[in-house]
Length: 75
Length: 170
Image (cartoon, rainbow over all chains, first blue to last red):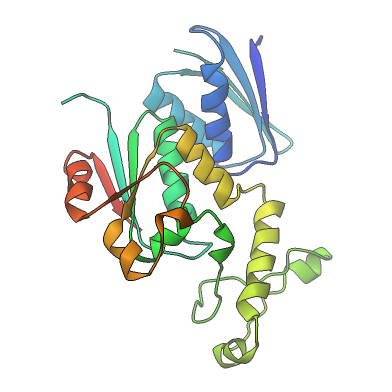
């Protein structure tokens, strides 16, 4: 999947991945895609909740070797 | 009435550990589109000081606090140092040592510092209200605190609390 911007939030803990993602989304346009890398297991549910409440679309959420990758399309 | 969701938090605690929940919840709420307001009163005022070195943790009388070392091999880090209250209370600078260890643990876990979270709140336009009565009661000056604070009384809290979807007392 292609992304217009990438956010490396690995090593960061709650609530920093969400706050950094919010900032990164502000820097891209509507319909563009943000790729987020995280190592925080709590971020899986949190990015779902973030998407649900902000209207941005969580296109995919995957895990590999303790690392989580999210693709979020800006509203 | 607009349809923006609103959060108010009353922050009453002045220790390093309890300084986290108000700033974490308010900054996250702001990221979710809430208009967030924190009313700092009593010991909560310590969270607004320019110099945050006043924020410490005390394991004394807190059986919920794991006392683990933030350095050394894994077997060493896994030890929970169960030190009786009477011994904790008699060791000078026990809280300073516990605070230094806690700050190291915070950094090891990629958790933001209070100064960082407070700044993120301000960037996200979280409103900071401070209780003027406690400022006077504790002998503080407005110059002890960061800029951008409104000094108010209980009635002003209710102006925000009365409109809020969520209100928390921490």
